[in-house]
Image 1 (cartoon, helix red, strand yellow):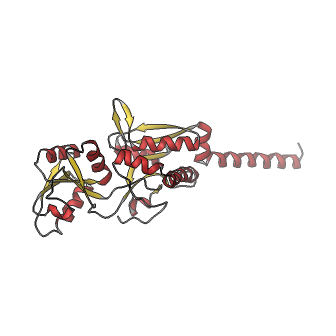
Image 2 (image 1 turned 60 degrees about the horizontal axis):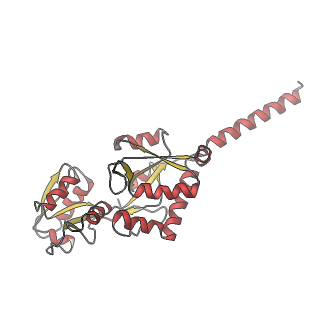
Image 3 (image 1 turned 45 degrees about the vertical axis):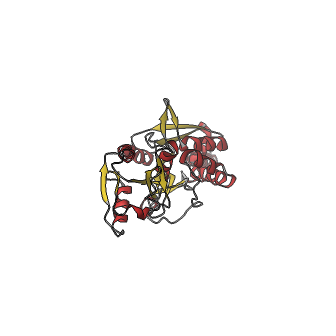
Length: 274
């Protein structure tokens, strides 16, 4: 082989290597070639993800079913304990996280968030027919509770300090215990994110009601992925589907079904309050 041929062969080899690296550097191409979008979640977070009669149910499954149709791929949910979800994403073990997670400024510095799919602002749940609580401020002088060490309980404590009368705050191991205490009359209200209590109220409308408006800083739930060039085409494609669903009303209908109400959420990227 003469020198010219060697140079040509070398150039072709380098070009092929670059093309190979480029192809493998696009997560959207990888997903389309495999035909599967891998989505990590924790199926203990109703109404977003939970088990019903032994099968996955919730808003996440419904939304990603539409994403799968639009992208022409199957959705493979991976059920994990929540503490292992974000480390698994960073390790490249799956494509996207469908927690969903509250968008904060600190988290935006580390991950790429998609268009929010629900409001996560903190609100109150009361017993159905309790006319003594019409607005959040009416818990002044009453008893309220929430999940132990939760951001929602912290928001409740902060809000209670602004009221004219003290609020007795009770902490519960989990939200289900808090709801049971509310139903039994041991507390007058429970604080949690609006979608969660909206779902509880829709499932037990004869027992619970949501107190409007929410009292916390406006915040939103969103899906997220890795913030890198390889992931961006895939995340942009999913975002396009979410925006399409928002525009044609599919997202609103799913919010009503799973969250008990429609929710106005930002379009695309936004600056969070938290």
